[in-house]
Image 1 (cartoon, rainbow, N blue to C red):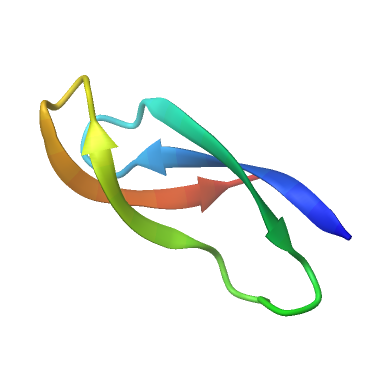
Image 2 (tube, rainbow, N blue to C red):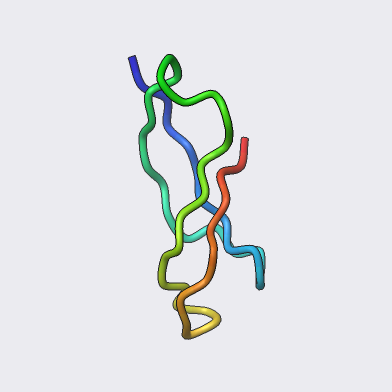
Length: 49
């Protein structure tokens, strides 16, 4: 069973990506380095509720 999560840029706080993750296997919040079109660079994106 997987949940939908939204990834938010840590620099400009725009919500750019949505993905799914398994709740049983990962307990901490997801952090990925992805491209932000608003910042025009690769930044860390964190999971929001």
